[in-house]
Image 1 (cartoon, rainbow, N blue to C red):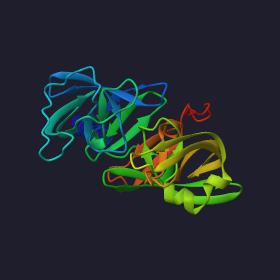
Image 2: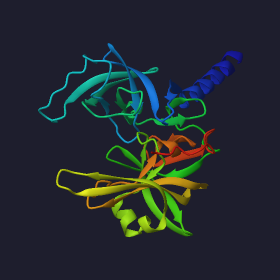
Image 3: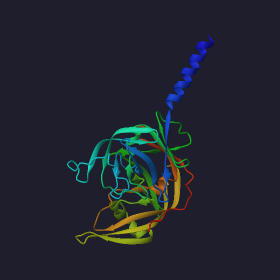
Image 4: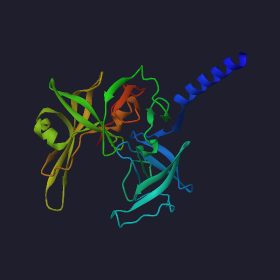
Length: 288
């Protein structure tokens, strides 16, 4: 009888461990709010990569210090250079079949980027309190989190949020963009439609021109409030583009806002769960 009871206990305990089995990947957060992980590529090349939540694949920067010779690029399929079927190991996780794009610029202190493909359809957490990713076999307890509907398309994550300017709410979808060090950028047609250029308070601006003489004015300012789920942030920095060139096609929820929460994403990428992180009330990162 004792043996039978012990066996049942072990089976039950083993099921619990398996159900919530997890792997942890340490990361470093830079002063520019970018997440850096140490990666081993093709069991040969060690390289510092910036985590880019807005892409599933990986890339190498043109100014990288490491040659990463194990990654062989071919420009037949993609003119910038593409390499298929690479192996990447970050922390205890090793993933095969990773695509690398060549000559893509990345964040400060990184030699390339790594996307969400390393999590392979599993639930994962970005824990800014402990500076680590946690990858789960099954969704962990989210009792202390607020659930946000997530739109997952083309390997990218979009969440709804409300921008409040002069007591008017402007709801839209924002692309989670961990490569952008600031807070918000608005899609140009959206900001033009709602005349943000006339309603926001601006701090600085810069004019860019292309070879055809077309120009775009980039303006950095502040909105009164941003509402994300049950959370509300005040005086949030935000950027708009004004002019002929419609170069900003999506609205960004940048790294300075991402770090203010701990995030759990379910396996099918339909829900994001958020809670305040230790950075929630930190001073905003201001772009020059």
